[in-house]
Image 1: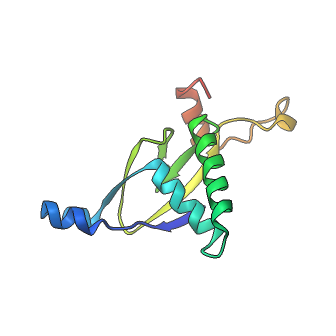
Image 2 (image 1 turned 120 degrees about the horizontal axis):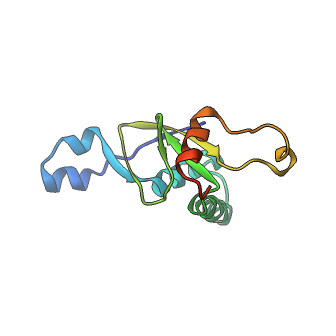
Image 3 (image 1 turned 90 degrees about the vertical axis):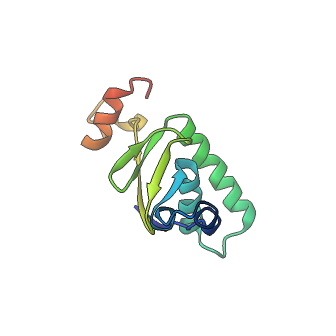
Length: 122
């Protein structure tokens, strides 16, 4: 679980004159993943490590290796739009069984299992 601070786009608030954008910010799932990578690695991590980690995590997300839970809502594609206010709690759920457990029980949570049943490509 990673908790990230959601940036407020002051330019949108000013240009639209809509205060709703100050209270809730629409972000794509891949943008939230980028914020999570930044939070997990910290400000002192080398830039090349951040870029490599972000590329790897984004590629895994695009390939369907995991789903992203944002404040209790599941997202499966990088382009999915999430509306967040101030902070967002992110959880990453694998939709595949580890090879060591392939013959045994599942490591999927009930939440993820439900998603996996609706999306058979995973």
